Length: 340
Image (cartoon, rainbow, N blue to C red; front, top):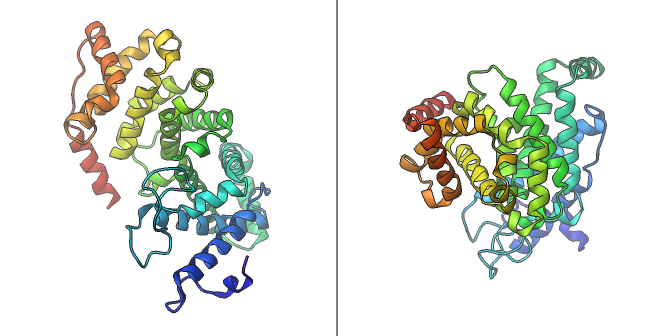
C-alpha cells in the first residue's frame, strides 16, 4: 500500500476522504493481524483486549452511523444489499477480519475465555495478574469486560452476514451457545448489569438466531443435528422461563425468530419430537404468555414473521390449555428504567 497513508490521521480535517480511508484501513488491519490465541491474562492478551476494543468501536460506528458526506466509512455507488464486498455500507472491520482469516480465531478465543471464567482456576489467575502488575482486581476485571464485550459485539456484527456464517466453525459456535445458555439459566440474578446486552449471556441469543435465519444457505440438516446434540432448544426454553425479564425487546425478538426458523426446518417438520418433547410444549405455551404474544400485540414483530412458531403454539394450546397472556410492556418498561 502507499506508505504515506500511514501518516494521515483519520480525524485530520484537512485530509481527503481517500486519505482517511487509507489510514483507517491500515490501522484496522494492524489491529486485526495482532489477534492471536494468547495465554489468558498474559501481557499480549491484555494488549490484544485493547486492539479488540479499537476494532469493535469501528465496527459499531460502521453499523450505526447514518449516511453522510463526511462519514469516511461509507462508499458511494454500491448496492444497498449484497455481500461485504459490494454492499453500500462498507463494513471495513468485518471485511478485513474475514480477509485476514481471523473469524474462527475470535470465536475460539472467546469460547476459551468463557470456559476459563467458569473454571476454578480463573480467580487464582486474576489474583496472579493483580500481583504481577501491582494492580487491583477491579482493573483486571475491567480489562476482561472490555475483552468479552469487544469480541462479542464484533462477532455479532460479523454473523449478520451469510458469507461469514458459511465459513464459521459452526460446531464450536453451537457448543459455545449451549454452554452460555446453561450458565445463564443456572444464575440466580434477578436482573443484569446495564451493559449486559453486550455480554455473552445476551449475545449468544443473537448468534444462534442469525445462524438459523440463514440455514437455507447452509447445511441445514447438520445445523439442526448440532442443535439437537447440544440441547439448544430445551436449554433456551428453560433460560427464558426463568429469566425472560433480563432481556430487551430486540433479544426477545431474536429468540422468537430462532424458534420459528428451527420449526421451519425440514428436520423439525419431519421429526418434531427430536427437538420438543411433551413437557417442553407446555413450557412453550408459558413463553407465549410471558413474551411471545406481547411481541406481536404490543411491539413490531409481525405474526407472519414467526408463523411456524405461532402455528405450533396454537396447536399445543389445544392440548395443555391457553397461554396466560401478560402485559410485556410493563416488564420491559421496568427493565429500561433500571438501565437508566
